[in-house]
Image 1 (cartoon, rainbow, N blue to C red):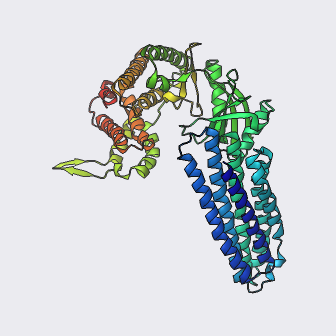
Image 2 (cartoon, rainbow, N blue to C red):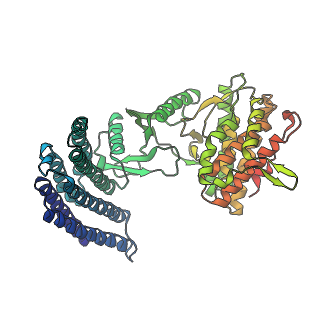
Image 3 (spheres, one colour):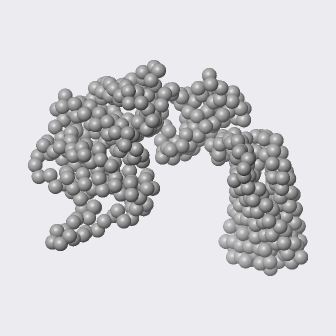
Length: 543
Protein backbone atom coordinates (compact mmCIF):
# COMPACT_ATOMS: atom_id res chain seq x y z
CA UNK A 1 0.00 0.00 0.00
CA UNK A 2 2.92 2.30 -0.70
CA UNK A 3 0.87 4.47 -3.08
CA UNK A 4 -1.73 5.02 -0.33
CA UNK A 5 0.98 6.04 2.13
CA UNK A 6 2.51 8.46 -0.35
CA UNK A 7 -0.82 10.08 -1.24
CA UNK A 8 -1.71 10.65 2.40
CA UNK A 9 1.70 12.23 2.97
CA UNK A 10 1.23 14.56 -0.01
CA UNK A 11 -2.28 15.44 1.16
CA UNK A 12 -0.95 16.29 4.63
CA UNK A 13 1.65 18.59 3.06
CA UNK A 14 -1.00 20.34 0.95
CA UNK A 15 -3.38 20.78 3.87
CA UNK A 16 -0.53 22.19 5.96
CA UNK A 17 0.29 24.68 3.18
CA UNK A 18 -3.42 25.53 3.00
CA UNK A 19 -3.47 26.34 6.69
CA UNK A 20 -0.25 28.37 6.43
CA UNK A 21 -1.89 30.39 3.66
CA UNK A 22 -4.96 30.87 5.84
CA UNK A 23 -2.83 32.29 8.65
CA UNK A 24 -1.24 34.71 6.19
CA UNK A 25 -4.68 35.73 4.93
CA UNK A 26 -5.78 36.58 8.47
CA UNK A 27 -2.63 38.58 9.11
CA UNK A 28 -2.85 40.46 5.81
CA UNK A 29 -6.06 39.76 3.84
CA UNK A 30 -5.93 40.05 0.05
CA UNK A 31 -7.96 38.72 -2.88
CA UNK A 32 -4.82 37.12 -4.30
CA UNK A 33 -4.24 34.97 -1.19
CA UNK A 34 -7.93 34.04 -0.98
CA UNK A 35 -7.96 32.95 -4.64
CA UNK A 36 -4.82 30.87 -4.09
CA UNK A 37 -6.44 29.08 -1.14
CA UNK A 38 -9.62 28.44 -3.13
CA UNK A 39 -7.60 26.93 -5.98
CA UNK A 40 -5.59 24.72 -3.64
CA UNK A 41 -8.87 23.47 -2.16
CA UNK A 42 -9.79 21.97 -5.54
CA UNK A 43 -6.44 20.19 -5.66
CA UNK A 44 -6.98 18.80 -2.15
CA UNK A 45 -10.46 17.61 -3.16
CA UNK A 46 -8.87 15.71 -6.03
CA UNK A 47 -6.29 14.16 -3.71
CA UNK A 48 -9.07 12.95 -1.45
CA UNK A 49 -10.75 11.35 -4.46
CA UNK A 50 -7.49 9.61 -5.42
CA UNK A 51 -7.13 8.14 -1.91
CA UNK A 52 -10.80 7.14 -1.93
CA UNK A 53 -10.35 5.36 -5.27
CA UNK A 54 -7.27 3.52 -3.98
CA UNK A 55 -9.17 2.37 -0.89
CA UNK A 56 -12.19 1.09 -2.77
CA UNK A 57 -10.17 -0.52 -5.55
CA UNK A 58 -8.17 -2.43 -2.92
CA UNK A 59 -11.33 -3.51 -1.14
CA UNK A 60 -12.91 -4.80 -4.34
CA UNK A 61 -9.73 -6.06 -5.94
CA UNK A 62 -8.64 -9.63 -6.51
CA UNK A 63 -6.26 -9.65 -3.55
CA UNK A 64 -7.75 -11.00 -0.33
CA UNK A 65 -7.12 -8.52 2.47
CA UNK A 66 -6.61 -9.35 6.13
CA UNK A 67 -8.66 -7.50 8.74
CA UNK A 68 -5.61 -5.35 9.43
CA UNK A 69 -5.46 -4.44 5.77
CA UNK A 70 -9.13 -3.52 5.69
CA UNK A 71 -8.73 -1.49 8.90
CA UNK A 72 -5.88 0.45 7.33
CA UNK A 73 -8.00 1.29 4.29
CA UNK A 74 -10.94 2.38 6.43
CA UNK A 75 -8.67 4.55 8.58
CA UNK A 76 -7.04 6.10 5.53
CA UNK A 77 -10.44 6.87 4.02
CA UNK A 78 -11.67 8.57 7.21
CA UNK A 79 -8.44 10.55 7.54
CA UNK A 80 -8.58 11.75 3.90
CA UNK A 81 -12.17 12.89 4.32
CA UNK A 82 -11.35 14.88 7.43
CA UNK A 83 -8.21 16.43 5.94
CA UNK A 84 -10.39 17.59 3.06
CA UNK A 85 -12.80 19.03 5.64
CA UNK A 86 -9.92 21.00 7.17
CA UNK A 87 -9.21 22.50 3.75
CA UNK A 88 -12.89 23.44 3.40
CA UNK A 89 -12.76 25.23 6.75
CA UNK A 90 -9.71 27.13 5.52
CA UNK A 91 -11.67 28.41 2.52
CA UNK A 92 -14.57 29.44 4.73
CA UNK A 93 -12.24 31.29 7.09
CA UNK A 94 -10.52 33.37 4.41
CA UNK A 95 -13.81 34.21 2.69
CA UNK A 96 -15.03 35.73 5.95
CA UNK A 97 -12.22 38.30 5.83
CA UNK A 98 -14.02 40.01 2.93
CA UNK A 99 -16.79 41.02 5.34
CA UNK A 100 -14.43 42.90 7.66
CA UNK A 101 -14.80 46.66 7.18
CA UNK A 102 -11.42 47.09 8.83
CA UNK A 103 -8.80 44.43 7.86
CA UNK A 104 -6.84 45.29 11.00
CA UNK A 105 -9.81 44.51 13.27
CA UNK A 106 -8.97 40.82 13.64
CA UNK A 107 -5.53 41.64 15.06
CA UNK A 108 -7.21 42.53 18.36
CA UNK A 109 -7.88 38.84 18.97
CA UNK A 110 -5.49 35.97 19.61
CA UNK A 111 -6.01 33.52 16.74
CA UNK A 112 -2.39 32.30 16.42
CA UNK A 113 -2.66 29.67 19.22
CA UNK A 114 -5.33 27.92 17.12
CA UNK A 115 -2.86 27.53 14.28
CA UNK A 116 -0.04 26.46 16.60
CA UNK A 117 -2.23 23.61 17.87
CA UNK A 118 -3.33 22.71 14.35
CA UNK A 119 0.21 22.56 12.93
CA UNK A 120 1.43 20.46 15.88
CA UNK A 121 -1.33 17.93 15.23
CA UNK A 122 -0.85 17.78 11.47
CA UNK A 123 2.86 17.03 12.00
CA UNK A 124 1.92 13.95 14.05
CA UNK A 125 -0.62 12.35 11.70
CA UNK A 126 1.78 10.55 9.36
CA UNK A 127 3.93 8.99 12.10
CA UNK A 128 0.90 8.17 14.25
CA UNK A 129 -0.76 6.27 11.40
CA UNK A 130 2.13 4.52 9.66
CA UNK A 131 4.24 3.88 12.77
CA UNK A 132 1.14 2.95 14.78
CA UNK A 133 2.03 5.33 17.59
CA UNK A 134 -0.83 5.43 20.09
CA UNK A 135 0.61 8.33 22.09
CA UNK A 136 0.71 10.53 18.97
CA UNK A 137 -2.84 9.53 18.04
CA UNK A 138 -3.96 10.43 21.53
CA UNK A 139 -2.23 13.81 21.28
CA UNK A 140 -4.05 14.53 18.01
CA UNK A 141 -7.37 13.77 19.70
CA UNK A 142 -6.59 16.10 22.59
CA UNK A 143 -6.30 18.99 20.11
CA UNK A 144 -10.08 19.10 19.93
CA UNK A 145 -10.50 19.97 23.61
CA UNK A 146 -7.60 22.45 23.42
CA UNK A 147 -9.23 24.27 20.50
CA UNK A 148 -12.58 24.22 22.32
CA UNK A 149 -11.00 26.02 25.29
CA UNK A 150 -9.33 28.59 23.03
CA UNK A 151 -12.65 29.21 21.26
CA UNK A 152 -14.55 29.60 24.55
CA UNK A 153 -12.16 32.33 25.65
CA UNK A 154 -12.59 34.31 22.42
CA UNK A 155 -16.34 33.64 22.30
CA UNK A 156 -16.87 35.06 25.79
CA UNK A 157 -14.85 38.17 24.92
CA UNK A 158 -16.72 38.82 21.65
CA UNK A 159 -20.10 38.20 23.27
CA UNK A 160 -19.29 40.75 25.96
CA UNK A 161 -18.19 43.31 23.37
CA UNK A 162 -21.33 42.77 21.30
CA UNK A 163 -23.39 44.08 24.22
CA UNK A 164 -21.86 47.52 23.66
CA UNK A 165 -23.46 47.65 20.21
CA UNK A 166 -20.29 48.96 18.53
CA UNK A 167 -18.79 47.39 15.36
CA UNK A 168 -21.28 44.52 15.50
CA UNK A 169 -20.62 43.53 11.88
CA UNK A 170 -16.88 43.07 12.47
CA UNK A 171 -17.52 41.28 15.77
CA UNK A 172 -19.94 38.79 14.20
CA UNK A 173 -17.56 38.14 11.30
CA UNK A 174 -14.72 37.57 13.77
CA UNK A 175 -16.91 35.17 15.73
CA UNK A 176 -17.59 33.18 12.54
CA UNK A 177 -13.85 32.94 11.89
CA UNK A 178 -13.20 31.59 15.37
CA UNK A 179 -16.12 29.19 14.98
CA UNK A 180 -14.48 27.66 11.89
CA UNK A 181 -11.18 27.42 13.78
CA UNK A 182 -13.01 25.56 16.56
CA UNK A 183 -14.56 23.16 14.04
CA UNK A 184 -11.07 22.24 12.87
CA UNK A 185 -10.75 20.46 16.21
CA UNK A 186 -13.68 18.18 15.37
CA UNK A 187 -11.95 17.08 12.17
CA UNK A 188 -8.66 16.48 14.03
CA UNK A 189 -10.53 14.39 16.59
CA UNK A 190 -11.92 12.23 13.79
CA UNK A 191 -8.40 11.82 12.39
CA UNK A 192 -7.00 10.77 15.78
CA UNK A 193 -9.83 8.32 16.43
CA UNK A 194 -9.35 6.81 12.97
CA UNK A 195 -5.69 6.15 13.82
CA UNK A 196 -6.70 4.56 17.14
CA UNK A 197 -9.11 2.37 15.18
CA UNK A 198 -6.30 1.24 12.90
CA UNK A 199 -4.00 0.46 15.82
CA UNK A 200 -6.57 -1.35 17.99
CA UNK A 201 -8.72 -2.83 15.24
CA UNK A 202 -11.87 -1.34 16.83
CA UNK A 203 -13.59 2.02 16.44
CA UNK A 204 -13.20 4.00 19.64
CA UNK A 205 -14.31 7.47 20.58
CA UNK A 206 -11.65 9.15 22.66
CA UNK A 207 -13.85 9.13 25.78
CA UNK A 208 -14.33 5.38 25.31
CA UNK A 209 -10.58 4.94 24.92
CA UNK A 210 -10.06 6.87 28.17
CA UNK A 211 -12.77 4.86 29.91
CA UNK A 212 -11.22 1.54 28.85
CA UNK A 213 -7.72 2.61 29.85
CA UNK A 214 -8.80 4.01 33.24
CA UNK A 215 -11.13 1.11 34.07
CA UNK A 216 -8.40 -1.42 33.30
CA UNK A 217 -6.12 0.60 35.56
CA UNK A 218 -8.74 0.58 38.32
CA UNK A 219 -8.83 -3.22 38.00
CA UNK A 220 -5.05 -3.39 38.49
CA UNK A 221 -4.34 -4.17 34.82
CA UNK A 222 -1.53 -1.74 34.03
CA UNK A 223 -0.93 -2.69 30.40
CA UNK A 224 -0.36 -0.43 27.39
CA UNK A 225 -3.66 0.01 25.59
CA UNK A 226 -1.98 -1.02 22.31
CA UNK A 227 -1.29 -4.43 23.89
CA UNK A 228 -4.98 -4.99 24.61
CA UNK A 229 -7.19 -6.94 22.22
CA UNK A 230 -10.73 -5.53 22.07
CA UNK A 231 -13.53 -7.45 20.35
CA UNK A 232 -16.83 -5.62 20.05
CA UNK A 233 -20.05 -7.39 20.92
CA UNK A 234 -22.70 -6.20 18.51
CA UNK A 235 -26.45 -6.69 18.55
CA UNK A 236 -27.07 -4.96 21.87
CA UNK A 237 -29.72 -2.23 22.07
CA UNK A 238 -28.71 -1.02 25.52
CA UNK A 239 -26.93 2.09 24.24
CA UNK A 240 -23.66 0.89 25.80
CA UNK A 241 -20.37 0.14 24.08
CA UNK A 242 -19.71 -3.50 24.91
CA UNK A 243 -16.70 -5.62 24.09
CA UNK A 244 -14.43 -8.39 25.27
CA UNK A 245 -11.00 -7.27 26.39
CA UNK A 246 -7.98 -9.58 26.54
CA UNK A 247 -4.30 -9.07 27.21
CA UNK A 248 -1.33 -10.59 25.46
CA UNK A 249 -2.73 -10.68 21.94
CA UNK A 250 -5.78 -12.73 22.92
CA UNK A 251 -3.99 -15.90 23.99
CA UNK A 252 -6.32 -18.85 24.46
CA UNK A 253 -5.52 -19.06 28.18
CA UNK A 254 -6.56 -15.41 28.67
CA UNK A 255 -10.33 -15.32 29.10
CA UNK A 256 -10.28 -11.57 29.55
CA UNK A 257 -13.12 -9.40 30.80
CA UNK A 258 -16.23 -7.70 29.41
CA UNK A 259 -15.99 -3.91 29.07
CA UNK A 260 -19.16 -1.80 29.09
CA UNK A 261 -19.23 1.96 28.65
CA UNK A 262 -22.35 4.10 28.63
CA UNK A 263 -24.87 6.03 30.69
CA UNK A 264 -23.82 6.12 34.34
CA UNK A 265 -27.35 5.61 35.66
CA UNK A 266 -27.75 2.32 33.78
CA UNK A 267 -24.35 0.93 34.66
CA UNK A 268 -24.64 1.85 38.33
CA UNK A 269 -28.04 0.15 38.39
CA UNK A 270 -26.57 -2.90 36.68
CA UNK A 271 -23.80 -3.10 39.28
CA UNK A 272 -26.35 -2.86 42.11
CA UNK A 273 -28.52 -5.57 40.52
CA UNK A 274 -25.52 -7.84 39.96
CA UNK A 275 -24.79 -7.59 43.66
CA UNK A 276 -28.43 -8.42 44.49
CA UNK A 277 -28.40 -11.44 42.18
CA UNK A 278 -25.10 -12.65 43.58
CA UNK A 279 -26.57 -12.56 47.08
CA UNK A 280 -29.58 -14.56 45.86
CA UNK A 281 -27.65 -17.12 43.79
CA UNK A 282 -23.86 -16.77 43.92
CA UNK A 283 -22.31 -17.24 40.49
CA UNK A 284 -25.52 -16.54 38.56
CA UNK A 285 -24.38 -13.06 37.40
CA UNK A 286 -20.85 -12.13 36.29
CA UNK A 287 -18.51 -10.70 38.92
CA UNK A 288 -17.83 -6.96 38.84
CA UNK A 289 -14.10 -6.45 38.26
CA UNK A 290 -14.05 -2.64 38.29
CA UNK A 291 -16.31 0.40 37.97
CA UNK A 292 -15.34 3.90 36.90
CA UNK A 293 -17.63 6.94 36.91
CA UNK A 294 -17.03 10.06 34.86
CA UNK A 295 -19.90 12.52 35.17
CA UNK A 296 -22.92 11.31 33.20
CA UNK A 297 -21.06 8.28 31.83
CA UNK A 298 -19.47 5.27 33.47
CA UNK A 299 -17.57 2.15 32.51
CA UNK A 300 -17.72 -1.33 33.95
CA UNK A 301 -15.45 -4.35 33.76
CA UNK A 302 -17.23 -7.67 34.24
CA UNK A 303 -16.07 -11.25 34.46
CA UNK A 304 -16.10 -13.03 31.11
CA UNK A 305 -18.49 -15.99 31.35
CA UNK A 306 -17.73 -19.23 29.54
CA UNK A 307 -20.47 -20.86 27.51
CA UNK A 308 -22.95 -19.71 24.89
CA UNK A 309 -26.30 -17.96 24.96
CA UNK A 310 -29.61 -19.78 24.78
CA UNK A 311 -30.11 -17.99 21.46
CA UNK A 312 -26.97 -19.62 20.05
CA UNK A 313 -28.23 -23.05 21.09
CA UNK A 314 -31.72 -22.47 19.69
CA UNK A 315 -30.25 -21.37 16.37
CA UNK A 316 -27.56 -23.99 15.88
CA UNK A 317 -27.30 -26.41 18.80
CA UNK A 318 -28.28 -30.05 18.90
CA UNK A 319 -31.71 -30.88 20.32
CA UNK A 320 -30.26 -32.79 23.29
CA UNK A 321 -27.99 -29.87 24.08
CA UNK A 322 -31.00 -27.52 23.97
CA UNK A 323 -33.09 -29.85 26.14
CA UNK A 324 -30.34 -29.93 28.78
CA UNK A 325 -30.02 -26.14 28.71
CA UNK A 326 -33.79 -25.64 29.12
CA UNK A 327 -33.98 -28.08 32.02
CA UNK A 328 -31.14 -26.31 33.84
CA UNK A 329 -32.64 -22.90 33.07
CA UNK A 330 -36.01 -23.91 34.53
CA UNK A 331 -34.36 -25.27 37.67
CA UNK A 332 -32.36 -22.07 38.09
CA UNK A 333 -35.35 -19.78 37.51
CA UNK A 334 -37.60 -21.78 39.83
CA UNK A 335 -35.00 -21.59 42.60
CA UNK A 336 -34.61 -17.82 42.12
CA UNK A 337 -38.38 -17.25 42.11
CA UNK A 338 -38.93 -19.35 45.20
CA UNK A 339 -36.12 -17.63 47.09
CA UNK A 340 -37.29 -14.08 46.27
CA UNK A 341 -41.07 -14.65 46.40
CA UNK A 342 -42.96 -12.07 48.45
CA UNK A 343 -46.67 -12.73 49.13
CA UNK A 344 -47.75 -9.21 48.21
CA UNK A 345 -49.91 -8.37 45.15
CA UNK A 346 -48.09 -6.53 42.35
CA UNK A 347 -49.15 -5.06 39.01
CA UNK A 348 -46.65 -4.78 36.15
CA UNK A 349 -48.93 -2.53 34.00
CA UNK A 350 -47.97 -4.27 30.75
CA UNK A 351 -50.15 -2.08 28.56
CA UNK A 352 -48.80 1.08 30.16
CA UNK A 353 -45.28 -0.12 29.31
CA UNK A 354 -46.46 -0.83 25.78
CA UNK A 355 -47.99 2.61 25.30
CA UNK A 356 -44.69 4.29 26.23
CA UNK A 357 -42.83 2.37 23.49
CA UNK A 358 -45.40 2.57 20.69
CA UNK A 359 -44.26 6.00 19.38
CA UNK A 360 -40.98 4.34 18.36
CA UNK A 361 -42.95 1.64 16.54
CA UNK A 362 -45.03 4.23 14.67
CA UNK A 363 -41.93 6.20 13.78
CA UNK A 364 -40.68 3.14 11.87
CA UNK A 365 -44.09 1.89 10.71
CA UNK A 366 -46.61 4.78 10.76
CA UNK A 367 -49.22 2.62 8.99
CA UNK A 368 -49.52 0.46 12.13
CA UNK A 369 -51.27 3.33 13.93
CA UNK A 370 -54.71 2.44 12.62
CA UNK A 371 -57.71 4.81 12.86
CA UNK A 372 -61.36 3.80 13.31
CA UNK A 373 -62.40 1.58 10.38
CA UNK A 374 -65.67 0.11 9.19
CA UNK A 375 -66.36 -3.23 7.56
CA UNK A 376 -69.94 -3.03 6.42
CA UNK A 377 -71.91 -2.15 9.53
CA UNK A 378 -69.18 -3.38 11.83
CA UNK A 379 -66.97 -0.70 13.39
CA UNK A 380 -63.36 -1.69 14.04
CA UNK A 381 -61.97 0.40 16.90
CA UNK A 382 -58.53 2.02 16.65
CA UNK A 383 -55.64 0.34 18.39
CA UNK A 384 -55.42 3.19 20.91
CA UNK A 385 -58.96 2.46 22.02
CA UNK A 386 -58.25 -1.25 22.45
CA UNK A 387 -55.13 -0.45 24.44
CA UNK A 388 -57.07 1.85 26.72
CA UNK A 389 -59.61 -0.89 27.44
CA UNK A 390 -56.89 -3.47 27.96
CA UNK A 391 -55.08 -1.22 30.39
CA UNK A 392 -58.18 -0.90 32.52
CA UNK A 393 -58.49 -4.69 32.49
CA UNK A 394 -54.84 -5.02 33.44
CA UNK A 395 -55.32 -2.80 36.49
CA UNK A 396 -57.70 -5.40 37.88
CA UNK A 397 -55.30 -8.30 37.30
CA UNK A 398 -52.66 -8.32 40.01
CA UNK A 399 -50.13 -11.06 40.46
CA UNK A 400 -50.77 -12.54 43.94
CA UNK A 401 -47.04 -12.34 44.67
CA UNK A 402 -43.83 -10.76 43.36
CA UNK A 403 -40.39 -12.19 42.59
CA UNK A 404 -37.03 -10.68 41.62
CA UNK A 405 -36.91 -10.93 37.82
CA UNK A 406 -34.17 -10.52 35.25
CA UNK A 407 -36.02 -7.62 33.63
CA UNK A 408 -34.74 -8.17 30.08
CA UNK A 409 -35.11 -11.93 29.77
CA UNK A 410 -34.22 -12.21 26.10
CA UNK A 411 -32.56 -15.47 25.11
CA UNK A 412 -29.34 -13.62 24.24
CA UNK A 413 -29.10 -12.47 27.88
CA UNK A 414 -28.94 -16.02 29.27
CA UNK A 415 -25.64 -17.93 29.15
CA UNK A 416 -25.44 -21.73 29.38
CA UNK A 417 -22.12 -23.17 30.53
CA UNK A 418 -22.38 -26.81 29.47
CA UNK A 419 -19.00 -27.86 30.88
CA UNK A 420 -19.82 -26.64 34.39
CA UNK A 421 -23.59 -27.11 34.11
CA UNK A 422 -24.32 -23.51 35.10
CA UNK A 423 -26.75 -20.83 33.96
CA UNK A 424 -25.68 -17.20 34.04
CA UNK A 425 -27.68 -13.98 33.63
CA UNK A 426 -26.21 -10.93 31.89
CA UNK A 427 -27.39 -7.36 31.14
CA UNK A 428 -29.20 -6.94 34.45
CA UNK A 429 -29.85 -3.22 34.77
CA UNK A 430 -33.65 -3.74 34.51
CA UNK A 431 -33.93 -6.37 37.27
CA UNK A 432 -36.71 -5.60 39.75
CA UNK A 433 -39.17 -7.13 42.21
CA UNK A 434 -42.33 -7.52 40.15
CA UNK A 435 -44.60 -9.93 38.24
CA UNK A 436 -42.67 -13.01 37.04
CA UNK A 437 -44.74 -13.10 33.84
CA UNK A 438 -42.84 -10.10 32.53
CA UNK A 439 -39.78 -12.33 32.17
CA UNK A 440 -41.86 -15.21 30.82
CA UNK A 441 -43.52 -13.12 28.08
CA UNK A 442 -40.23 -11.48 27.04
CA UNK A 443 -38.53 -14.88 26.86
CA UNK A 444 -41.29 -16.38 24.70
CA UNK A 445 -41.41 -13.53 22.19
CA UNK A 446 -37.60 -13.25 22.01
CA UNK A 447 -37.70 -16.81 20.68
CA UNK A 448 -40.55 -16.19 18.28
CA UNK A 449 -39.01 -13.08 16.75
CA UNK A 450 -35.81 -14.85 15.67
CA UNK A 451 -35.83 -14.11 11.92
CA UNK A 452 -35.21 -17.67 10.72
CA UNK A 453 -37.77 -19.79 8.94
CA UNK A 454 -36.05 -23.13 8.42
CA UNK A 455 -38.66 -25.76 9.51
CA UNK A 456 -36.22 -27.60 11.78
CA UNK A 457 -35.13 -24.37 13.47
CA UNK A 458 -38.74 -23.27 13.94
CA UNK A 459 -39.47 -26.63 15.56
CA UNK A 460 -36.75 -25.94 18.13
CA UNK A 461 -38.19 -22.47 18.73
CA UNK A 462 -41.69 -23.87 19.27
CA UNK A 463 -40.32 -26.46 21.69
CA UNK A 464 -38.55 -23.79 23.78
CA UNK A 465 -41.67 -21.58 23.90
CA UNK A 466 -43.89 -24.51 24.91
CA UNK A 467 -41.42 -25.62 27.58
CA UNK A 468 -41.32 -22.16 29.14
CA UNK A 469 -45.11 -21.88 29.11
CA UNK A 470 -45.59 -25.28 30.73
CA UNK A 471 -42.91 -24.54 33.34
CA UNK A 472 -44.36 -21.13 34.25
CA UNK A 473 -47.94 -22.43 34.33
CA UNK A 474 -46.96 -25.20 36.74
CA UNK A 475 -45.30 -22.60 38.98
CA UNK A 476 -48.53 -20.57 38.86
CA UNK A 477 -50.60 -23.64 39.81
CA UNK A 478 -48.42 -24.36 42.82
CA UNK A 479 -48.80 -20.78 44.04
CA UNK A 480 -52.53 -20.29 43.32
CA UNK A 481 -52.00 -17.73 40.56
CA UNK A 482 -55.45 -17.94 38.97
CA UNK A 483 -55.06 -15.05 36.47
CA UNK A 484 -51.83 -16.45 34.99
CA UNK A 485 -53.11 -16.76 31.39
CA UNK A 486 -54.81 -13.37 31.31
CA UNK A 487 -51.72 -11.53 32.56
CA UNK A 488 -49.45 -13.54 30.28
CA UNK A 489 -51.66 -12.46 27.37
CA UNK A 490 -51.16 -8.80 28.32
CA UNK A 491 -47.41 -9.36 28.63
CA UNK A 492 -47.32 -10.95 25.17
CA UNK A 493 -49.33 -8.05 23.74
CA UNK A 494 -46.65 -5.71 25.06
CA UNK A 495 -43.77 -7.78 23.68
CA UNK A 496 -45.32 -8.46 20.26
CA UNK A 497 -46.37 -4.88 19.58
CA UNK A 498 -43.15 -3.27 20.76
CA UNK A 499 -40.76 -5.84 19.25
CA UNK A 500 -41.72 -4.68 15.76
CA UNK A 501 -39.63 -1.53 16.31
CA UNK A 502 -36.50 -3.68 16.17
CA UNK A 503 -37.46 -5.54 12.98
CA UNK A 504 -36.70 -3.93 9.60
CA UNK A 505 -38.30 -6.78 7.64
CA UNK A 506 -41.66 -5.09 7.13
CA UNK A 507 -43.54 -8.34 6.54
CA UNK A 508 -42.20 -10.00 9.69
CA UNK A 509 -42.69 -6.82 11.75
CA UNK A 510 -46.32 -6.65 10.62
CA UNK A 511 -46.77 -10.34 11.44
CA UNK A 512 -45.62 -9.79 15.03
CA UNK A 513 -47.67 -6.61 15.35
CA UNK A 514 -50.86 -8.31 14.15
CA UNK A 515 -50.34 -11.17 16.61
CA UNK A 516 -50.21 -8.57 19.36
CA UNK A 517 -53.43 -7.00 18.05
CA UNK A 518 -55.06 -10.46 17.91
CA UNK A 519 -54.22 -11.11 21.57
CA UNK A 520 -55.38 -7.62 22.46
CA UNK A 521 -58.77 -8.29 20.87
CA UNK A 522 -58.99 -11.65 22.64
CA UNK A 523 -58.49 -10.19 26.11
CA UNK A 524 -60.68 -7.13 25.51
CA UNK A 525 -63.49 -9.24 24.03
CA UNK A 526 -63.46 -11.81 26.87
CA UNK A 527 -66.73 -11.63 28.79
CA UNK A 528 -66.20 -14.24 31.50
CA UNK A 529 -64.20 -14.02 34.72
CA UNK A 530 -60.53 -13.63 33.78
CA UNK A 531 -59.68 -16.65 35.91
CA UNK A 532 -61.24 -18.67 33.06
CA UNK A 533 -59.21 -17.03 30.29
CA UNK A 534 -56.82 -19.35 28.45
CA UNK A 535 -53.92 -18.21 26.30
CA UNK A 536 -54.32 -19.11 22.60
CA UNK A 537 -50.88 -20.70 22.31
CA UNK A 538 -51.23 -21.13 18.55
CA UNK A 539 -50.33 -17.44 18.22
CA UNK A 540 -46.79 -18.39 19.28
CA UNK A 541 -46.39 -21.59 17.29
CA UNK A 542 -47.33 -20.77 13.70
CA UNK A 543 -45.19 -18.69 11.34
